[in-house]
Image (cartoon, rainbow, N blue to C red):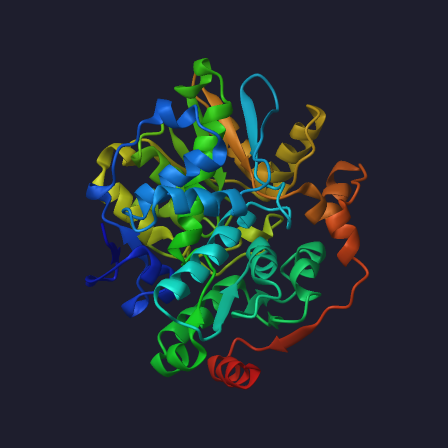
Length: 431
């Protein structure tokens, strides 16, 4: 089962080629042919350990390009930390995806991608170092930098919007050095992402730099994210498995796409809700069918400050081929005031959280149906937003050792305008 370029269906590639190429012709995203995706034996899978189950899922998504044995081994290496489901109250639980090395859900995808890219280079006999350029609105940069740190086969360049990422988020990737270079761009995330897309449209740059991207552009990251939704269901009681709705705080829409893929594979998710902040392009689109991104707004949930979500074509591909999914998918926008109130409500119930998860909690309370159980997705550790959370809650947060380690380190940044030629010249000199 080849992966298809959604912008140019004449380009069909294997899983490993898609990992190696990153972005297809005409800036198209690679995606499976939805009609060829199998229905998996869910009951069997849920009885398996996390890594073994993930091996089956990843092999199925890759159309058999990865054997179940290889995929299981990669999952064991990449997913070597917990993804617990924690009760908030009787009607709401949180899937905590922030127990990896950089305290955010991006660790799952970034670590799997690092292994998949190494395997792809081996399969293709490619010994040249890759230049991995990624844009981040918060957590991607840290996860990718950590996954590839000090690997001789890769140089990592992280673009992020200056002063629009929390200081502790940024320090996890701006203080590393070695084969990791961070660039603070005087703009917003959408401008950073546009620069990455321009690079991939530049054939000379792609070839000269042996370019790849570790954004959710890369299909390996998306496939990895499907696995933790099955892990969540394995932890739910039988009573809850058929009445649970997933609520995903959404910016670039990769995480919510993974939830829909899990549903397509057979996971009995009742509904999927994409919760956005005031950057509400998708909720407005679902109402009007007019795609009209507004200028990006800066919010408390900064990692979701994205007006033109890159993964939306993948979501649309799923919904177009399976109208049943469309009837079980919705998106809702949450205001800043509602975010603050949700964060406070969670805390009053004994659950310390952060703004992105609070957006999901607020969205579920707005959309909750009779008898429904909500599984909100906890995308980052609250300590990554310690200053903001402490200000809102009036409560102190103890920093994990990982953050204590970087807080006093010097940042090793470049600064740049959102100018493609300037970035191109820098990358050609950076080799």
